[in-house]
Length: 507
Ligand code: ME8
Image (cartoon, rainbow, N blue to C red; front, side, top):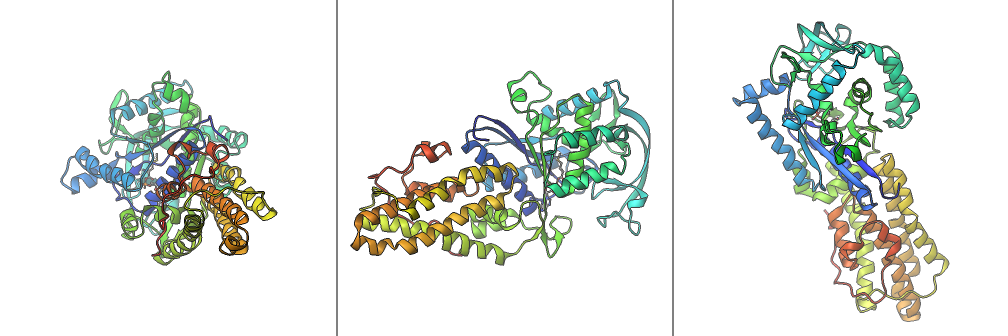
């Protein structure tokens, strides 16, 4: 992947029943970093996020708050929009499931499944244990001491529902996973999904009659669509479906990547491809299930009362440090416990000591020894070439990591070069060369400035503001900050640089 591609990435849509917390911010920051990376690499990217607003839980919450459901959704949805502003998201579309465009989309998908001539949708009796908190039905075999596996209370419900004949899709799903080995990442989640499907699939109930806050089932308005079947359709809504002749749909569907937390992998990797195939719509190319942020081992959530609002972190540590921390600290895909000590260590270690110090030292020396102008390099020595090569090799390495995506490894590659550059400063000692060999001093400072330019350019997706400040201090013009400029526009000797200022303060 190196430019010219269409790329569509989605976050899950957040339940309006919750309050934005670090877990939500995590998925959103991850998608934003990927969006920025792909855009800087010359691709046309559609990035969507939004809110999931239907269902019994929302109807109940609205009632408890003394509000009409729509007014409740308007208010809570706004808190997620505010989170996006706080997190500094690049251009994106925010899709709400109560919008007309989404209702049209979900209705069309339903109709296509109902009329596909394969009997994939039928009316039947459904009895089940239901947890309002989880918004999920459970089998008796799943209950633990009369409660949902999540610990939530359940109640027995029986109603006439529409069913989706998922049982008929087992072989086709297994064939699909086989012929699309990249569909599910990381590998451990792929194996879990395949084992789940191999164990046999039951038909699933996809409508409800016990409440009304949902999208009406076409031609049978006493039913509303089960929230999950219509919520998944939001990804199509974001691409302009059902307007299949539109430029947007043709450009961006099938979707490139659904980024989701591990708890909703099954919905995205089993139900969703079956719905899409049944509706005759091409299936998304990849679903990646990331891990959870936990607090003392428990998943962060509003209902458990242990959540960390993203604003707390941004106010305390700054936006870029927060973005950096969440993407660097955990291998993307694994769980991890949040701790303030860990974020402070990252800020003081990786950012202030390693990268901040490198930039500050080098730019200050250029200011003092070279009258604040980019120095002119002489012939490169072996050590110079080694450092420049390491910097040039970053882009292909990062492309491979962002394709997974493995942000932590992308950042490891960058910080390996930060480490190389800091060692190179110590070994070359430009402060001594300044007196003994000024041509060599200029060459060393040029090599360092050029290395810092590469680092700052490639750090932009994760820390756009801080990277921008470093690029400003290197006088890199706004039009030369995409990845094509890495090779095309090296620093030009003689360019006047502004006075350097520290970019990463210690906490
Ligand atoms: O699941 N750590 O919405 P949601 C990491 N509406 N990720 C977390 C997390 C945590 N502690 N807590 C939540 C829904 N998430 C549905 C999605 S998509 C068609 C419908 C992640 O608001 C969670 O895994 O409960 C999920 O990916 C996302 O936040 C939204 O969770």
